[in-house]
Amino acid sequence: MRVLPTALEGVVLIEPDVHRDGRGLFLETYRADRYRELGIADVFVQDNFSRSVARTLRGLHAQRTKPQAKLVRVVRGEIYDVVVDIRRGSPTYRRWAAFRLSESNFLQCYVPVGFAHGFCVLSDVADVEYKCTDFYDPGDELRIRWDDPELGIGWPVDSPILSPKDAAAPPLREVEPWLPSWPGPGAELKPR
Image (cartoon, rainbow, N blue to C red; front, side):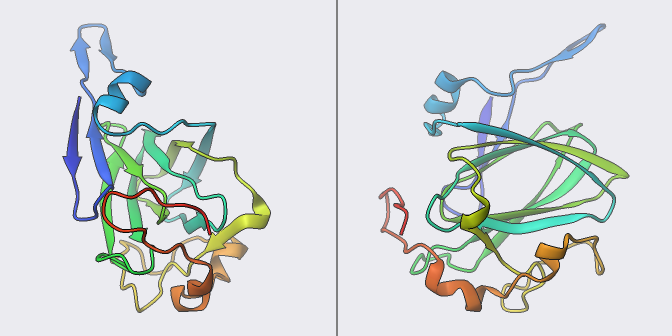
């Protein structure tokens, strides 16, 4: 297993070891001690699963006072996975990175606290599983408009299928008062 760094500090792709033979394949999708050795020491407390059809876009999501780190992987299909730095004062504030995660490349995306997350489905159907470090709280949701022109995310779709909440999400500028502050290099982000 190895870690592939990205342009956003703390956001990494994990490439697992896939063991293939005549029967098929085997891989570990999570093992706490190995992930800790890779620098991911989070305690995950909730696992989520979503199934979405082609052109579905879920995001951009975060939580305000109960921030979650996430470990995202695709079980079936392919997604365009997007991570946005929402830590006010960070050197990469408002920057985004995108990755193709699929059932065939087995890549996982680690999204640390302080980043918004979203994805768009590229295949006919995509099954996505992700681990979270805090429990989902609907009253603590933070949604950011998927096509905010100030972010300029290069989504691979022009008119995605959105939930009513995601369609009504405000631009980042309107939610800035609720965003976390960057604690500085090497420091752990604390909830506001």
